[in-house]
Length: 305
Image 1 (cartoon, rainbow, N blue to C red):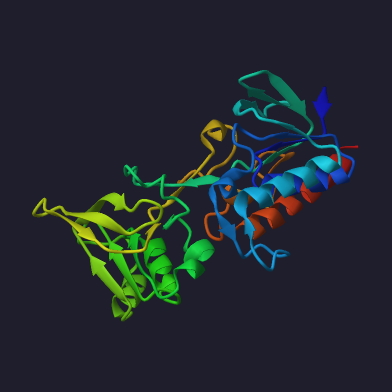
Image 2: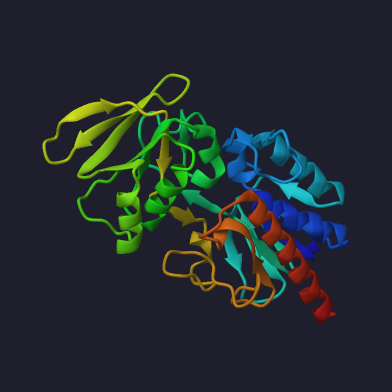
């Protein structure tokens, strides 16, 4: 069987793309990966997705989006794409279970935040540990929190968090920063921000919520417990694009390059969401890009006919 559209990924971008494609009566397949729903499946309260004034749990939102996408006939498989062939049409995608062919492809495989790999980091994720200040900052009103990182994103996250938090402590492993001078100065001049250098975090403390972090001074090797109620990681993201190297144009970090709108370097292959968005990284922007990709794919297929 040859599909009209195969969507790779099942976060807000992929599911919205599948919704629009299947509703346009295109034969649509979602290759969802082993954890359908993307990063929001690991998010607790979502308060900034339109249409849910009281907020909604991340997994519940994704379950609703899956039901809506499949309502119009999109099929979904819990498989992972291991290999792609974009050299000839129809395109061929290979998973651990078999090959699938499609006249067009929408890549929405997302990006993963880089984590420190601490013993309790993932256990307390969503309970005070976060990698998105824009998503979760609101929940830290009048609290003391820590931000890890030394680049522009760390400074931006810290400054943004001062809108809510009582105090923000930036923890950086060096005494020099990758951040631009202007962003570093803005952080240094903010009365709510303290910066600790030559220091790493070796663990997150707390049973059911973050109650502190363990700091290690890299000069003295000494460790101490530091009380905070939140920990934000701002050490970058890694787009899930390894299998597209050599097949599509990627930037130096690995994000998919687009020639216009959602069009990649291969005619008939489109992209949406965090896999090519290193700036906004929001569920609502990812969904918007999924809509755009489906409309672009529909027009491409119509032009082929």
